[in-house]
Length: 229
Length: 229
DNA sequence: TAAAAACGAACGAGTGTTCGTCATTTTATT
DNA sequence: AATAAAATGACGAACACTCGTTCGTTTTTA
Image (cartoon, rainbow over all chains, first blue to last red; front, top):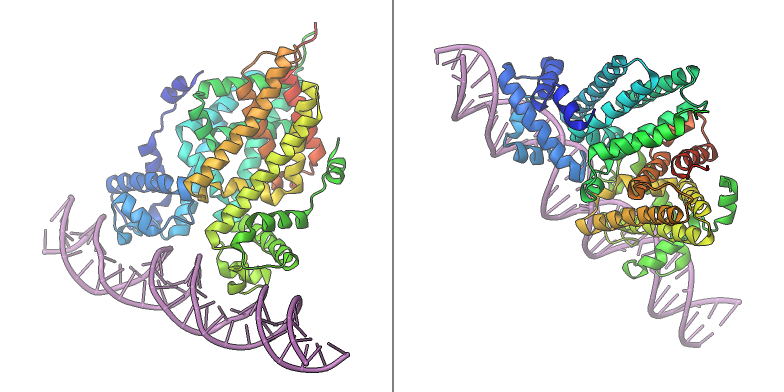
């Protein structure tokens, strides 16, 4: 599966994500009608990503956000209780998207090697499709309150476990070499993260997602696969 | 070479780094005597790292810094022209340390495989020794002005080239497999960065630098080494 | 003509930075 | 060795500004 195939198969678009955000936080919003809420949330999210990509969430002022969205300060506060809560809302949604997708792709395959490939691919392709979300989630995690940051850590360890479980399973079947699978899972996660943390580099070097994914898979398989005698 | 050996062999300590910072920025400081300057710079740097690790540089106020260092607001401004310049000073010094060390270790070895190992090890061990510098350099890079950020990009590509050159050289000698060495260099850099970006994870899982380095090397060599017939 | 949504001036708290003043150390002179 | 003079460094109140947030009002929608 390449990126285009993934993109077509993966239903959700930016508007759908905005709708999910609305439904999940409806009780904290003063906006009643879904249509207006979703449309404006989409504008707000896009503006947040655009502004914070360059200077970070802390440095983004509500006036920046007002200017970028074309909405007034007062209007913005109808969509979220405060700046800090806006951060949590985005982080929560970002985590939900990743967890939901990875679990889904892990269940689709049966053979450990295919499962490993599917999960690694899904993560990188998803991070390409929702790059701003991924970048934001990583870079702004430390601005969360302790409870929020704990959720980030838990999520990191959850996705790590998905990978190490697959490796474990594959070792039991004699497909993968015996190794420190926890550590290998960490390495895989590091490689995945590279893609959305340093996109400027790959854009400049004209390296596509598909090339990147293939290289990651080659590297992981070269290390993990049991040598055939 | 393990971390302890690296640590002993690597001369510079925190005080020496503070001295380098003083000598490099002496003309912008109102402090004349080296001894006082170095002692206070050490306090300032430590305070900056301690504060920004949790909330980032933008969110650190000069009053936070004053409180943590025990120095008055007025005194702080005798050591750097302004908050933004303080950021550049730390970033510049961080880059200088990495470049200087990597170039040194690359020159020490002759055989491509040994050179590759030495450079990878040196980078990770250095990031362990000066973890706050590395974390700060990565996380606060986007707060720099365009010129500063360009320097960061150039540095990233310089260290990538050190690695890809070694791989190229090794391929010519038949030691390494023919591959997209640029991309492999990127992967190696991603693995190295993982160590200082997610230290909390490795501390919790009781994984030492030496274990981490060995795993990275095993992975890289498993992928790069030509198969012996 | 209500209900819903958007508006933006106003508020108090917190920001980076300056500068006149004071304490301390070094140098020069007796 | 004692003292005066000069240089150095530290201090923190004060300034102009920006921040997140509120709320009474106006505009738009149904």
